[in-house]
Amino acid sequence: MRKKIVAGNWKMNTLPAEGVELAKAVAARRHETDSSVELIVCPPFTHLSEVVKATRGKGVAVGAQNCAAEEKGAYTGEVSAAMLAALGVEYVILGHSERREYYGETSATLNRKLAMAYTNNLIPIYCVGEKLEEREAGRHFDIVGAQLREVVYNLTPEQFTSLVVAYEPVWAIGTGKTATSEQAEEMHAHIRRTLAEKFGAAADATPILYGGSCKPSNAQELFAKPDVDGGLIGGAALEADSFIRIGQSF
Ligand code: PEP
Image (cartoon, rainbow, N blue to C red; front, top):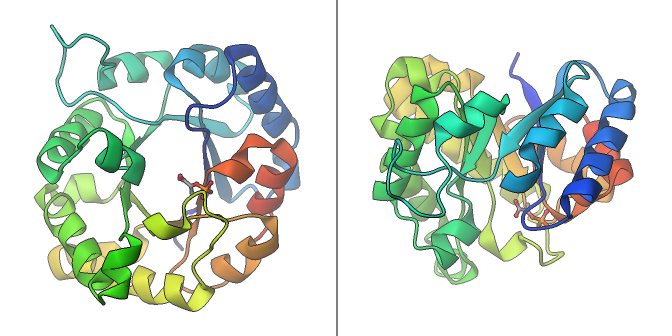
């Protein structure tokens, strides 16, 4: 049985006090979701410490949205994986399309970030996904395949066993345009096959999350697909009620 996961990517939203309230509201309703579902909230860096405290022992894990590619030192404005781990953060989102697009993150950068995450026992949620023009040109499988081969293929078999992958078609993020469950499943199956080419049967245990305008009204249909193991949720994670309802959608 693969782990089922619903992770909320809050992006650059909420002030610290609002974020703590949101995390508390999620924790208070955690019992309404099946205990086999891992719920993760990923607030901005500034809220992490308080959100970890507010959720400790309540069945809600905390993730960061990024970490530095370097260990420590003269990297003004960066936050290291060790700093996150020291706060009690367990996961880190890496390679989100917004970071690839606006901050120039490449596979080379992401290889270093994943290495830092593993060194500090953080579980990476590694995001892949194609842009609209890439899908329209029929290149979506190749693009996602390359994003996996250039980064995930460099992991050791042991590191690979804790990886979480998120498929987020760029054209579906924040647009209200969700991939159909068939589009999601064919890409998730492709991702699992690509991972299996390198890591064999271990790929059967890798949670692959769907992200892109996932909400309570479409989560159930998406999560019913055999290779969709949950969701990485943006906008709908900013309300405890919709986040919890997505968590109930398995
Ligand atoms: C995201 O950016 O990770 C995301 C899935 O956003 P949204 O759900 O708002 O499309």
